Length: 152
Ligand SMILES: [Zn+2]
Image 1 (spheres, rainbow, N blue to C red):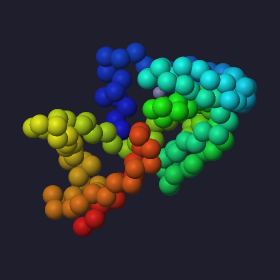
Image 2: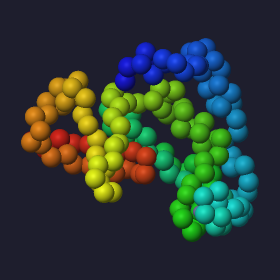
Image 3: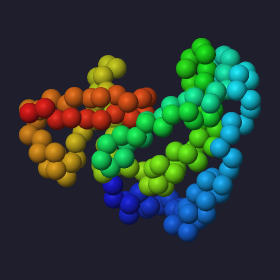
Image 4: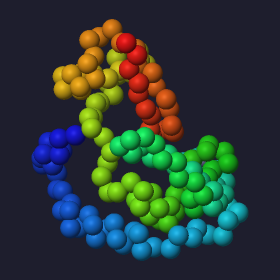
């Protein structure tokens, strides 16, 4: 990812302030905010959210995937929405560092009808050696993350 492009026109956190925020989050308690089993209201569907100590989160790291388990937070019994406590965010940060782990960014675009697509920029096509005849196999890790394998 080209950081300079992202920074244009948008206020950027300095490394120092980012590190301060990171330390503050890491210093918070690792226990759930509410006792496990407490029911709260889901911000997405208004269904019942149950506090748990057993959430799971999958992180992409440079050489694979890390699965964090036993994270504190709450999960909606109706729609499955998850809310991670600050403690879970802290545990996640400890394992991921503060950088977003991505080499390239593409935009999802809407084609005719409901079909979605994405365009590969030239540098991404070059490093993956795409010619336009490949198939991409997607391993979906969760709703925010997937691994892509090129089949030639
Ligand atoms: Zn819900």
